[in-house]
Length: 86
Image (cartoon, rainbow, N blue to C red; front, side):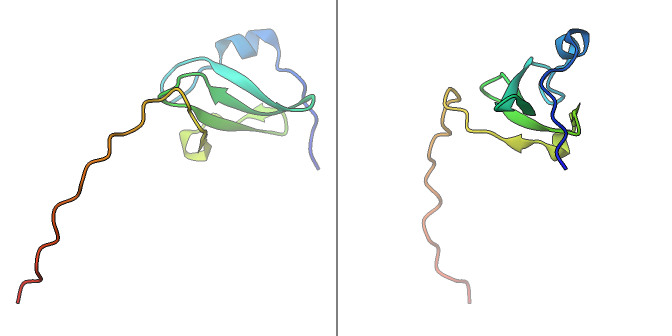
C-alpha cells in the first residue's frame, strides 16, 4: 500500500541536503505524490526514494539519474591487444 505524501513540513524540507555532496534536493513527484528527492548538483544527481512519507537519505539506497548538464567522460582508447604469453 502506498502512502500519499504531498509535502514535507517546510522546516524539514529546508534542512535536507544530499548526503553525498551536501547540495540541495528537489522534489520528484508522480502527480501529487512525492516519489523521491533528487540532488540538484549536475555532477552528483542522486535520487533518494521516499518510502511511507519518509525520505531515505542513504547513498547506498540512492539511484543515479540522467544528468544532461554533467560533462561527458572523455573516451580513452585502451591498450593495443598484446599477444598471449606462452
